[in-house]
Image 1 (cartoon, rainbow, N blue to C red):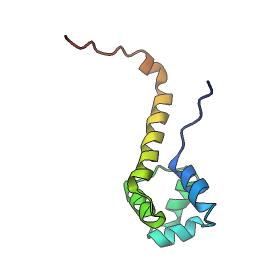
Image 2 (cartoon, rainbow, N blue to C red):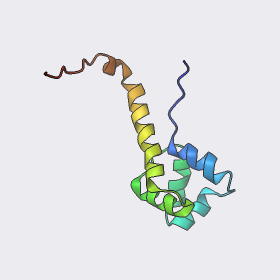
Image 3 (cartoon, rainbow, N blue to C red):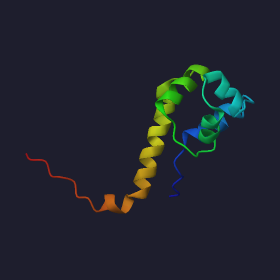
Length: 98
């Protein structure tokens, strides 16, 4: 089975919001009151999404902060799992009494 790479919230922002709505990173940044570089770096997948930005994007795009943070959380967990998969395979689960 082919394992796809984790989806970064910046990819979702770029492909599902910026491009279809013909919005620039600068326009979104101005609208939500953050530096342009924050949205540019997020959309280019250079930085992770913060709760502050999730709240602002949710308000602007009429989504929920949980939508944005869910993508970030899933990305972080999948990335970490990929990075330490060999170590995880070596861990034996504890046996529960009873």
